[in-house]
Image (cartoon, rainbow, N blue to C red):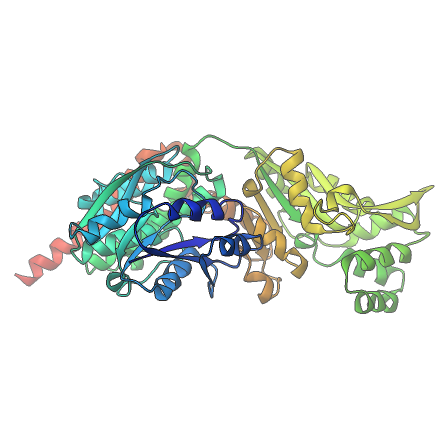
Length: 499
């Protein structure tokens, strides 16, 4: 019997078809879907096909793989991805048979596919230096594998993109018989720039850490270990085709304090604002009441109040740099357009999305209109849903949601932190919000945002400034060679001392 484990996060559109494909095998098996706290129909769709579904205790593929293994009832385990619809009908047998027949202890898949850029630009150059015996594998980063449970129980699962290469290296270090099998053509979505940068950094870090452990030399103590990973991250970004991409920044992430609080203080209405925020918990009612509170206030006055609110340093400069790097820069506000558009123009954003505060003769009428981009097509009766802006942007800008970087810091921003390609929060965000972020913006400036997105802030050092003059492949080889040469010298030195 075989346990097939499928880690899944928001794969409701494909998971059922993947399970149906797996069921076509003639091998007796159980199917376990490990749900990584999906927000779509992944769980219900998997249950329709009779799969066993467990919920992972923590976000991340490695955790899901480990917990799926713990739940498995059989000794031979096959891992498959949840978003690939082109598996051959006998995919499970292809991976499990070499183990069943005593030909191998660990099976890695290879396949024809589009892409494979991190494999060619990062994984293989590093493996050629630190683990040359593994360079022969066509797709060392493939996540479709088979192994015995007793081996998987002995290793630690990385909880990021490094998990698959780590398992391959662990199998090699334990002297397991490793076999690579062809599973045909695999088609899946191309990764966006942010995901590719994240993948390259995590894969390179994992290989370097495994090399350090294998050599009894702790490379983590080297002052330049982060530079090596960062340079690889930057190199792969420079080597791929530039894609259209969006950065969506919530206004509260760049203002030192909230406009409503500033307006309430200016007009001596703190008690009214406190009553509104404590009484009306749903955003739609709260925004309407705040609009009514501003009735009769003039446009110049409201914008003058906005001008008194400090903006975190380097915001305008960062927006300019982002635009130069190909980002469409959008300011998002759950407040009012007369204020948000004013700030948008000051800081150089391309677009602004906010609620429409009705004005008459340049004075607020107290009425409010919720624009269509805040209306979720799935729930049209709900006039205001801040997270609906992501669907609007993907439709109207023809940019995949995974190519959108979102920056926010409020609890209501959690759905966008989850759904965007990269979710970033500021340090002032609550701990419950930070849990859902991919990265945290350090310090009290927007400038580090460039480094978080690009994987390396080239302005931080003269060494990083020189990176842009080097070719991607050459840079990776040079960086990896440096680490490899250092490792060689240290090993040789220890050998000579032992003689």
